[in-house]
Length: 353
Image (cartoon, rainbow, N blue to C red):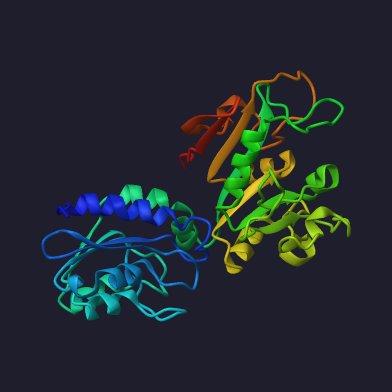
């Protein structure tokens, strides 16, 4: 096998890490490629599920004795603590690896320190190779760990004129089956799906991740969270069907903001405490407006159907904008056709001051 550069190995490690999206939380996604002394790939691994072997351990097992004197290329700083598994920094030292190349340092104070441990043992350590790409692939976990609350994605579906339902309230289906399949794949990558009690009362959604063709549930289900200030969620609502864990978050339990409704910052802090690193906000327009007004949305994914209604509910209500100068500016990062619909991904721009 031909030798590869460290840069090429890191690109491969980032690809491997992505295979763990949706199954590793509350742990990060991590990929690792091991090169021998000649620069040939002798081991690959990724973190597949929480509690399972880390990427470095999988790669070391493949490499065996050929890891000695070689280079480990890893997307995240090797952990330096004993949790459900042992410290990867010690495993790399024991295997005789001479160099470790890291894309991103670990922001988790519990697990960080691997780079220092490796250097103290005489292992060469390099940081920052393809850091931007590795950050993007692990953005939810990294963001959550750095600030103490989950990475929040707001997903909505609307017609080209911004309507989420017709004037008579009918909304099934605004977007195509292809778009709905895409949404269920998105649900499969997060730890929690949030909806307001208004959406539960109006639409009675399941909020599960499932195969739309046969209705089967995905093996791993996100936590269903109903933001319900006064506890109006019916006992027979489908979110209470036992298909997945459900938390009805009330103001009495979480705490209330000045408006008497659930304090959203406190809600996110509690979700982080419960191991949620990425959350998908699905409905409705009032809750989405409140999240946007509070600056709590990290990414927006909009599914736009080639339809016009001219009347009916809009996808977004009051977001704290009263004049054009206060408009929430977005950076569009992707536009993809999904069936007949468009999926638009955007990031809210941080405001100055």
